[in-house]
Image (cartoon, rainbow, N blue to C red; front, side):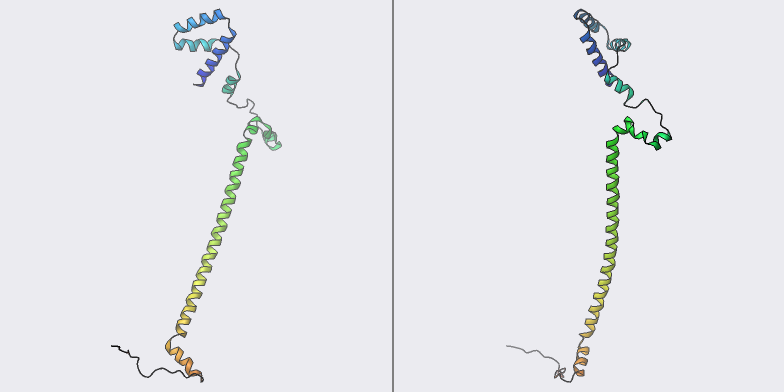
Length: 169
């Protein structure tokens, strides 16, 4: 697909450079030749490469691949074109790494706090249960009567007769 576009661009460039008579002859030849011959003719004609062709052929990779430990430790590798082009990607990855680390740290802190709160809640439940049972024991009728007998001021006593219902007509 890309090569056919390149071939079309080359064809357009050559048409612009040709005089009108040669252009007419080429149009007549194109009408008579099959597509496979057209492609072969375009590839056999020597032309100077365009910027698009150079980019496609090199794929944006540097031809110099002399990477040594000295270049890495010296910092020379940071000045290569590939590193300069990928700097945005490196910064984006660094930002994502920082976000990931802070998110994990905050999640761990929340988990620790949650565990502390669970333990505290359990202790408060035990304390409330203990107080509730103490209150139950202190409010029993027998306990209340004993407390009243211990104080001489109280005139309250337990009834000797059972309670009864008043019937109305």
